Length: 420
Image 1 (cartoon, helix red, strand yellow):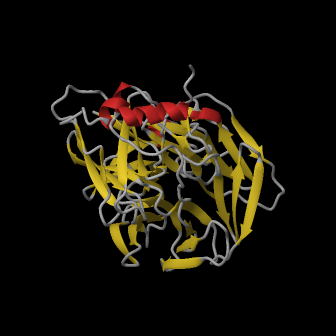
Image 2: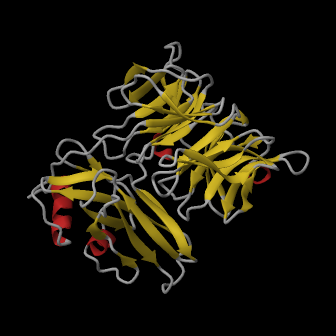
Image 3: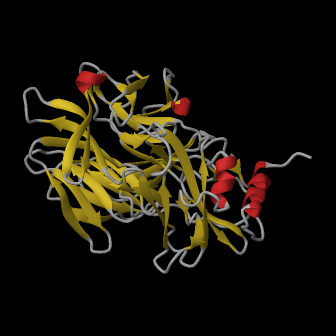
């Protein structure tokens, strides 16, 4: 008898002692779109368009980078101007912007928060002449260099997007000036060229369900299938449509089909690769170009380093206080995905580690992989490999979901953790 993937995952849950009625269940769509403009506005826009709301005014300073922090609430943003720039944090509850690191020597571009909770950004160090372009890390108030143009290649300016590469756990960085390219950069600076095509200019986003990497180039949206090194960066949307691709982001990996979202001027839009359709909605906008965007509340699973080889795993499913959750680990990857009835996807390759983690059999190395969300819609787990031999940067993938009376509720995006 052939078992469908969705039923197979149901059997894994049952074997882990998780019982529920079925596989159906409603998952909320991602939250509102947060975008950052070149004129210093942090803007909130509904996915269906309508009036946008400027929730923070950064006094007209050129802004570039935007990322959700590990708590799935605060937003990290960067200002590019060395005279008035820096790294900042916006707290939606306090509705206030605080300074994380004032700029004195750096001009900042794109930003991510990595598996340790550190802030990693692209830009250039102006302390010497000429300025040094590269990838940098802010950890405990100290900036260190991960890689520079001198290591990556001559005239490689990493100024066109930054993500965590779900395929490797490394940094996925784009160069959009002079020597174009997409690069996979490890934490020790080791760099692999993914593509040198001139198809990325402003922002990049990765489809976690397929590994495809999307890049922007004015009126073009381009894709590197599978994020494969040496692949071809192909244009998939024609120019001349009046749609300009600057800020982009993908929707939830668990959605029934991939959507690549964009925000420009008075429009918000999404492209669906499966049907090759483009949908646009009308909105409002303050002056300036939207350079980066994220979805509110989409980082439902994240880690923060608590020791040399120990992490706290933050679980946050907004609106689901009291729900039961389960976290699965995988040593194989986030693909092949499990497709549930209705088309939703669980991006985690099922292997022996998945079953052991969901059954609680990895104690004391992995604790609280199942539990109940508290009144703040949150929970924490612990991943501690302190007592184990060195892994040498072995990647481990994780995915979480909530369970309802009718089945699977919200499914998190997968994350990847590299074990030292």
